[in-house]
Image 1 (tube, helix red, strand yellow):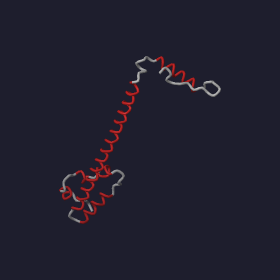
Image 2 (spheres, rainbow, N blue to C red):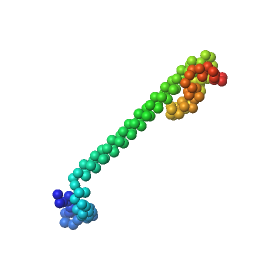
Image 3 (tube, helix red, strand yellow):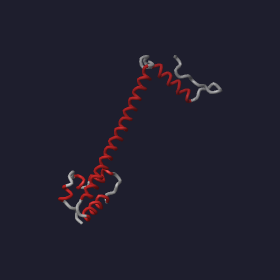
Image 4 (cartoon, rainbow, N blue to C red):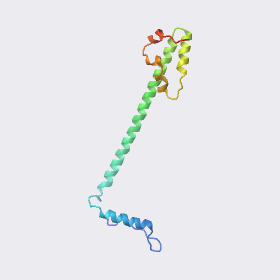
Length: 134
């Protein structure tokens, strides 16, 4: 156990830069207290690394679930707004409502539906009280 880092010599017996670095590292290692050189530290380090990776994985999965929930909510709001447009009494108002609904670019469905005033109103009565201008 005394020789943790074996030295490698070249074919002609001289040590290169790597071997010099290795000897310096070996001296530093042997100057450390025995408690620091104990075999328990690699296990503790591996446990901490695994715990960190598990937490990072948890964050990624959590963000994916939140994004999925937002996308599902945006799709539901879009479907509800489309249903409200189809429920309007006059054909012109219905077509105008659908035209306004479909005029928003669909880069992000959450942003596409949150700016619509008829989407924010939860009741169908809003469509009857405030007809869309033709």
